[in-house]
Amino acid sequence: MRSSCAVIPQLILGLSVVLASSPLAFARERGPRVEVVCPSAPIPVRLAEKDVLVYELHITNFDLVPLTLKRVEVFTDPENTQSIKTLSDKALSDAMIEIGQKSGSTASPTIVPGNRAVLFMWVELAPHSTTPARLLHRMIFATPAEDVSANNPAESTLENFPISVSRDAVPVVGSPFDGGVWVAGDAPGNDSGHRRSILAIDGHIYSPERFAIDWVKVGPNGDSHHDGTNRNENFWGYGEPIHAVADGEVTRVVDGMPENKTRVVPQPVTLDNIAGNYVVLRISAIRYATYAHLQPGSIKVHVHDRVKRGDILARLGNSGQATGPHLHFQVTDGNSVLESEGVPFVFDKFTDLGPGSDYELNKHTSTPRSASIPGKDDVVEFKSETK
Image (cartoon, rainbow, N blue to C red; front, side):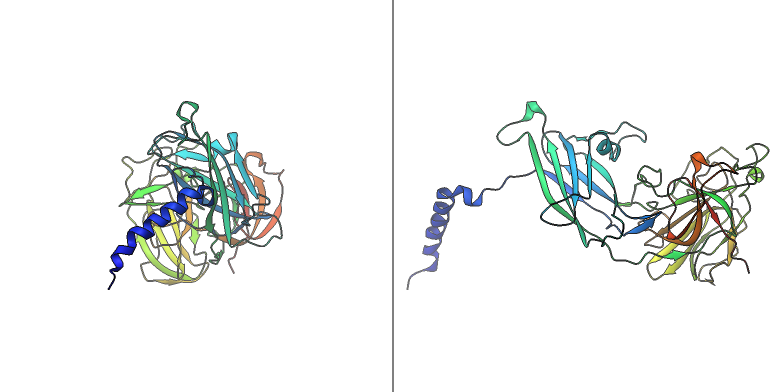
């Protein structure tokens, strides 16, 4: 009986011959030595007149030489016939941060060996277009001239890197206020402070503030305050009742944090005091609304309470990491202010009064919006829902 083991060397030899005699049949460029990760799949959300896909690409350089990201193109079909988003030059640099650099540092598209960069993607879909099931990415990297060799080409391309587009429903919510004019501070925008916030906690990274908004009330003088800014009571929004934006169950309550003096952030800021006094409300099986920086002693609900849309939860204050009275509002996929992913939401209706930078009390645009989220620093008006 012939041993099967004797056949193995012949098979290996045969494979070697095939590879040696036909190298082009199996030729494939190595591509860039990078890892690319999308921590949270984008969910389409309506902002003004367009649907937007908001997500991040975390890029880690596993090469021995620096790699410069030169160009990123986004496609919806594998044939790459027409990109729906292209980033290069300054637009690309502006959309990137290097992990480990201080906030506000000059962005660079060059990633040194062993480092990670985050590319903040903001993809606007064409009006009336079908939402794609996935997005494909072409990423072109350049090697420094002094490091170019047979093993390190001048340019290398990562082709068709895919990410799925989530089909999760976007919650439609009501106003957290009983009407009024409000600035949507640091609301969704690709360069907002909330958008760029990434937290590392207990061995994981999170972006809970991806769609967060800092709400500041605008008063009859067209400003956020009257008679100076040295007292919380001088801010028009201070003490405003905060309402449930949807029916739900209270899942977290923190009270007893002291009120801040205006323009002074408490030190040190910790994971325990950063949100100040807050309420978390579960508004669906997998969606949680957070109301932060509330007035101490004003919270009217307890964990496991069931509330209806419009019920008063607390009053607007100046607690936690805040320098003035405002409401920090966000929706996440988990029952935690920080250890969760920020997900989009839309208000059922509001009036868009234009960007805060252009707003004048008696001279502004007035555009009704429905099932939309306001953009960064937009001024919006909510109508009272009180019956």
